[in-house]
Image (cartoon, rainbow, N blue to C red; front, side):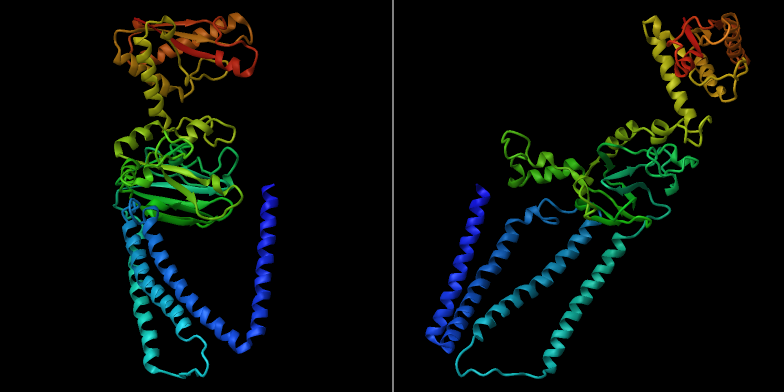
Length: 498
């Protein structure tokens, strides 16, 4: 029904306009061509004066009323170190072009009135005027020179890369339809190499995991954090179509082009909380964020720094939004410690892992910290079941009691734990699955337990603190009904006995 009413209104307006045109034509015929031209010119002149009298004040008033909603004004001063330079450049351009805008519009509509058609008025044609030529050539040239010089200075400031001796953090932003993949360096502070040929469903960035710098890199899937006052260098690229990396509050904007890496450097100077407090001072930001919920959070409370794509990259363009939170260094460090390596948590040990079967340098300290925490928890626990810990990274050659070389890292962690806790004794348990002869399994498990005990005594642990027992397949952790479960049952563990 609403659509029908709209269509009828459009038809009615069209009919009215057509009838007005016909009435005008009839009036011109009755008055005569000369008189009609005189009336039209008079009305055009007066209407031009009326229009400019309303239009220019409306432009000024609306700009003033909405200034607190625009970037660079009110609470929206730049949140980055370089942003003030860009804002001042835009303000200078606005002032200079604004003067021209006002003067030319006044002249345009005033001349439309002043030189409206009148009988017996003759036009005067000026073929050439050197003075005018000099004025309208020299003045724009001087203004343009001022703007260009100022712009080049701003460009060199904003687009300067980091120096080799500067303290900064580097992250990477990769645009794809339809999201941003943000990569942080791990504790080594360096981003690993990439190769587009390595891109797969499980390795979306094509990270080269033979490069050790990739092993600890982090790819957060939720909100992103940056520390205030820290210089940030962003590597910017794209996987499919043209995107644009836009952090409008930081005055950061750069195209993300497939096959053409770019970068941007900026330093956040306002935390998210500080920006919210600025917004809080303005009445328009104390209105409800959701107009349908007057008692809900205010607009300033819901403010977030947003990473957007400033290119129309497809029908899912709207979903490119990511949230960046700027926090203190302490808050950033706490968030960063919670982030896990993409490689170690999502890719490690898979069929296409180039390091499968190897112990990586980055894993050694991580495993040591995890082992120490587990031993401490077991000692402090009152539950007897918690006193048994599996040696997850102790391996033997198939069908034998010969320790593989990579087992030394886990066993060295056990040596450290026993030295740190001289009051404890342990029982080393060997276990197998149910494949093969039961008696042979018990014998093999006993030999493996003794091999572990021998490793410990060779490194100074008193044999009186150790007991080696082979359990064969008598204590399975899972039913022996699959290869995965049988692998769980083939293990070596130790039980703490105080």
